[in-house]
Length: 107
Image (tube, rainbow, N blue to C red):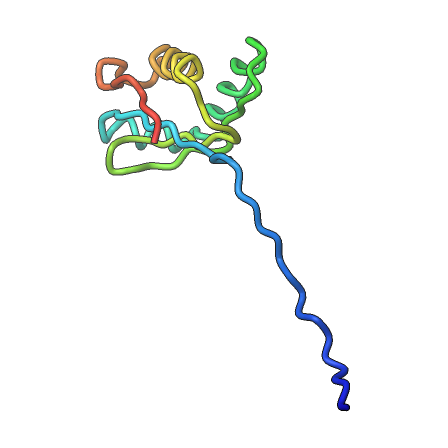
């Protein structure tokens, strides 16, 4: 009998969980998108400070422009209360026209 010395092929066990990231879309006017993007790092820091201040376990990672406005990408799946925190912060910014900011939604 011939015995083969072939090694077993490695097996990959891949498991998936629920979504690990979520996007919060904030529809705003084009001029506001440009203003947000110039100071996006400051806005992310402040949003995270607010989220941490009310003891939420979500944090914002980055902001990027989208054809609908801006998108805030978070580390966890956001819930409606998280949206309210982000919306309130964005509407209180002095350099943005808050009338152009529409309620955020999840994507």
